[in-house]
Length: 213
Ligand SMILES: [Zn+2]
Image (tube, rainbow, N blue to C red; front, top):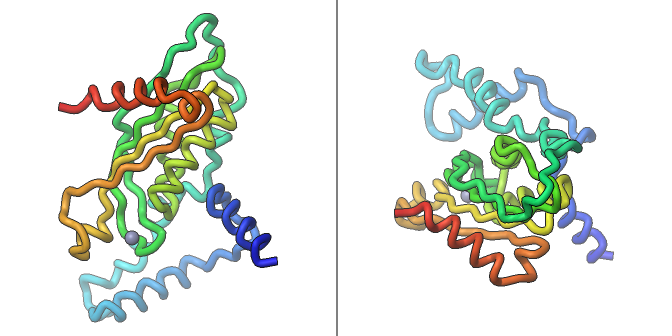
């Protein structure tokens, strides 16, 4: 019984979709929550400099987390450019993103590198960056985000394989002194031919690393 519950939870975690069942609070309730956090931090929400802060924070949250209202499959679309004869690797490197860790709601700042092996059709290049951004604008773990970007592209485009590498700095570690500032975490997800053929994986890694000095 427990196992079934765990599997369901795992599926939900790997593919977070906006949950229509959740009742969102009103903006006023969100602002009241910010005032509570200001008090919890030890400051006075009624002092002049903080008067508009709850309103600003609520507004900022709707931008920073707008990924919940966006569907990566819609962005990737159902129509793709047909490219007869081109089946070499496509790599988009250094897609900068800002996300927030789901454990502390503190920024994760990083770059994503995405590659795929076309199977007769390709994506508009800007779409890959949009998909990274949608998943970044949700609460994340770096591992989940890496898998989510790979899965979304794999499911929509159905290429021969997808490779995603994310390098990011976690402010919850840097700021709380758990790790030295500037240390990054690397995560990778490989699907299809990237998972099955080490040579394709190495080719992807060498293209990603060739960008660095
Ligand atoms: Zn954290």
